[in-house]
Image (cartoon, rainbow, N blue to C red):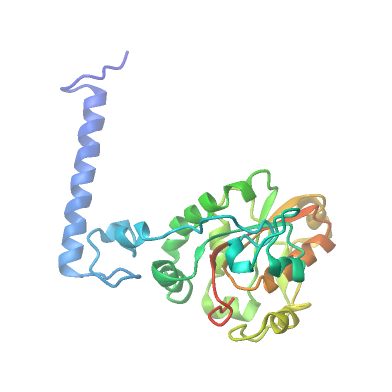
Length: 272
């Protein structure tokens, strides 16, 4: 029987090793903070624990999830959509312009620390942020992910994917739990959505997506047909991109398409 006492017992040895590892990490963190003075990607203060990642604990703690009743379709707080229907729990915007998305959730507003963290992740290539951001997304979207057969990242156009070096939505999707299905392909390099009205946004992304040729017809049938799929994106604005992706997934035979976005941005600010 393994002893849990002190001295030279296995349990005591394991405890000492763990304590030494923690002490070593603390010392290395202090050395890095003093010698290199790496700054937090969000608030730009010197990191106390650089080994913990490029964002300080204060900025992570400052993230606040969306609160209050939300629209079942888009996931945005009802107040932002201008009232809800008691019958379908949809905001006014979703009742005016129905979406192919059946059910959606958004984790937080695209503001403050979260905006800075997403910017560092997306435009500065801080891909180590994908893990903690995925955890934020998974917690906010637990109900949407429950029972899902797969998650589908909103794709970038191939040339944009090459220039950036990665697809931020795919990095987020990889940490959510359900299998990641590369079901969609972006066939048009659409103009930036910044400053476009809602109707213009929909026209801008119309027919911009198709079933991925990499998956193949047999693969699509196994992965998508009669399945519950969750679309994943970093920033949602009017939902035009998510709607178009969901429409294609349903044409591919998906039984239900849900959506999960990390942040909700005003239309004038989004680059999604």
